[in-house]
Amino acid sequence: MARIVAQPYMFPRIERWLALCRDHGIFITITSSYRSSEKQRRLYEAYLARGRKGLPAAAPGNSLHETGEAIDFAARFNPTYGSRRGTDAYTYAGRLAEAAGFRWGGRFTRRDPVHIDAGVPWWGGD
Ligand SMILES: [Zn+2]
Image 1 (tube, protein in one colour):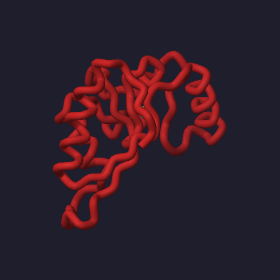
Image 2 (cartoon, rainbow, N blue to C red):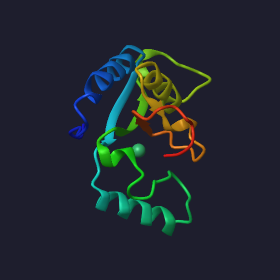
Image 3 (cartoon, helix red, strand yellow):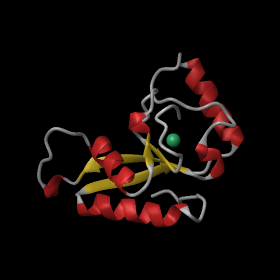
C-alpha cells in the first residue's frame, strides 16, 4: 500500500473506513492521497487530452488532493468472504466511506468512484 500523505485529522476517519472494509470483506489499496498542484495540473491536462473521458480530474487549485484531504483507492471483494450480488466493490467501499464520515466521488456529477474526500456533501464536483 502506498504511503498515505494527508492532513492529520484525516487519519482516524481513514482507519475507521479501512476497518469497516476489512469487516465487510473488501480489500482496499490506496492509489493516491496528497498531490502537489504540479501533479494535479498534469492529471488535469491528461484528462483534457483524452476528451474528458474516464475518471475525472479537477483543475489545479480545485482538488482536495492538493490540501491532503482526499484519497483515491482500488477495491475488490475478498473472494473467500462469500458473494455480494447487486453491488460492486467500489460502491460498497464508497458507502462504507460515507459511514466513516467521507464524501464519496461515486455520487459526483462527473462520477469518480475511486475517490473519497473530507469535503462537505454537496454532490457537485471533484
Ligand atoms: Zn481523487
